[in-house]
Image (cartoon, each protein chain N blue to C red):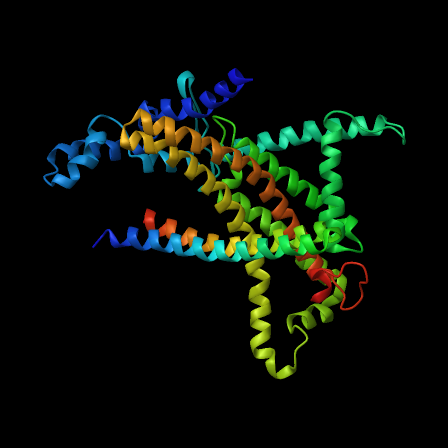
Amino acid sequence: MEGLGYLGAGIGAGLAVIGAGLGIGNIAASAAEGTARQPEATSDIRTTMIIAAALIEGVALFGEVICVLLALK
Amino acid sequence: MRVKAISRILALVVPVLLSLNSHAFAVSGKEEAPVRESVTAAAPAAPATVATSAAAPAAEGEEKPGDVIMHHILDNSTFAFEPFGEIHLPHLSVGGYDISITKHVVMIWLASAILLVVASAAGASVKKLSARQAPKGIANVIEALVDFIRVDVAKSNIGQGYEKFLPFLLSVFFFILVCNLLGLIPYGATATGNVNVTLTLSIFTFFITQVAAFKAHGVKGYLQHLTAGTHWSLWIIMVPIEIIGQFTKPFALTVRLFANMTAGHIIILSLIFISFILKSYIVAMAVSVPFAIFIYLLELFVAFLQAFVFTMLSALFIGLATAHEGGHDEHALEGAHH
């Protein structure tokens, strides 16, 4: 039964990555589309994209930190 | 060119290889020594078949990969220059508090010293220029970064009165950048991979944000901000949320920088340790070395990106705190929507 902690940590890490990947992928897709439609707004779009990606990444990292704590306990 | 690349690869891989086989960690750490001995003593006695595979490396005098990785990530008071010996840093305690100088403290000092030298050299060479000359050398590099932070980060996120916050933002950017990059040098340690360092940096952001909000709106305006402009019947929900929101912002900054810098190092070391766990040269050549180099280059990018993200979000939070409702005409980004 002791291995279940590691199992939970592994599954949790994977789920967090799925969520973050979907979110950041959506941002990148929209940003690419926006840049293609309006090339003069590239720098604004890039800034917004990085901020949003960083926020999503932050949430995913909370999940990963919990998984690391589980695995190292 | 190829010789240069190979020497860089060796510089990356050799310290880890050497540290794997050495007994230095166990001899240097007084607390670690008994633990190790109990492991080696317990290994032959372990009856289960599962335990023998795990105990076999321990019996040979090696350490578990997880322990070595954690040793590299965590803070301690020994600089191990593997083939050449090691430096023990002194233990200090004042009034029962342990304030010993650790590896990460030394890296912080090193980063500060590098910044002092580089930035003052750049500043001095810029001062000597006449108005129509372009800066050269190191001053050119620094000027490009400073101008980027000034225009794209501070001005576009804070707007009016951004000059006040520029020294803080620039200091934080360059400090995090140098700390991140120092961690990628062999024998170095990542000070920003220590949660205490990142928490301190984000506490600076927190206090600057709060003080800026007070100065921009006064006490009444600050309290009005906490209600988020909603009807009074919603205040019982909105006020706690807004107050918690003040604290989650710096907490997210802390964890983001810490986790990004730590995760990269764990991934590099784990990739290298794959070849030791599987004990195969083919895996080392096909998987460990190329993937470790790829992640290393990615880390080089992440070092810049995280310094930028920390600065950008700090500027954004300051901008949110100081924004006047409908007062701005220029930056229609996040600041004005608050």
